[in-house]
Image 1 (tube, rainbow, N blue to C red):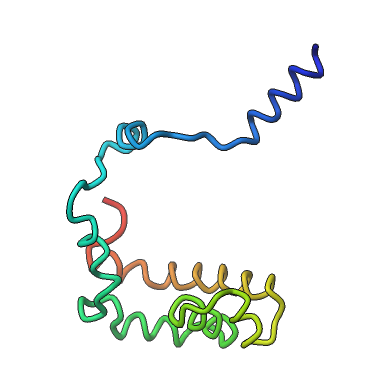
Image 2: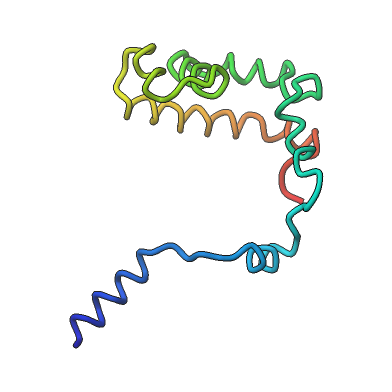
Amino acid sequence: MYSIFVNRYRKRRRQPTTLSIDELEAERGQSMPAKGWGSHFEILQNPALGWAGPEVDGALQRLPEEFRGAILLVDVGELTYEEASRALDCPLGTLRSRLFRARKLLFSSLQAHAAKLGYGKR
């Protein structure tokens, strides 16, 4: 009985906790928008709204070449990981590592710019 208890306990701890939308809204203290949710993503769809300015270009240029290539192929060019790894002639794991590091560097270098545009912690 002890082994069964311990195994079930460990299994429950490994499983992620699932929340319904109502529980998530109650926890966060805000509700999901019912209508017009697409307008919240307008900044990503329309570069003229200010997200792709000189700050973003400068942050991309400051990235090391291998990180910049990974970001441009996958996030900007919308290639799959497999296609980008073939284009860069590197293993898939290396590409994923480069993407993670590049996104982390971009995040840290663009925090002030995002705050100026009104994004971030509220």
